[in-house]
Image (tube, rainbow, N blue to C red; front, side, top):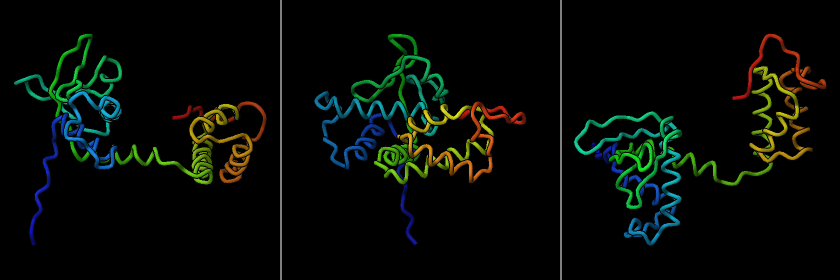
Length: 199
């Protein structure tokens, strides 16, 4: 039996950018990707990388030349000014102009995140969206979410693109599946045991 050596789990920010580009650009990555002539592509790569860092799904570490590496709190990235340099070799974090950090990214976490992003971007049929809407409504009703029908309708439209007629069909089916008939009555559902909001 031969053992295949796996690539290192932690990669540089530049390698993370190239890895992301190879997936997002279907393997057609120019050698000079980070030289300033491919700003449109690099802008998309920067955006998805920052989304990955903020998501908590992707492990990464920061260090400042010679300091110990540490894992930042993804919430910090949501609240502080942060960005990736044009040459994809450093990341800024903090108040303007920001502290400059070296970054190491977990290759396998990043690949999983990219695959998840690609699945979300794939167009889905109306039937698939309607099924997702129904499953979501059933979950909300089973958890006893204490909201009025318009709240669910606007969320379904935003999440699944559900039009009025399709929402009404899913709404009736969800009530039938869950047996939560109080959702069919006008006004806010009366469910004193549970008062939860949507997550």
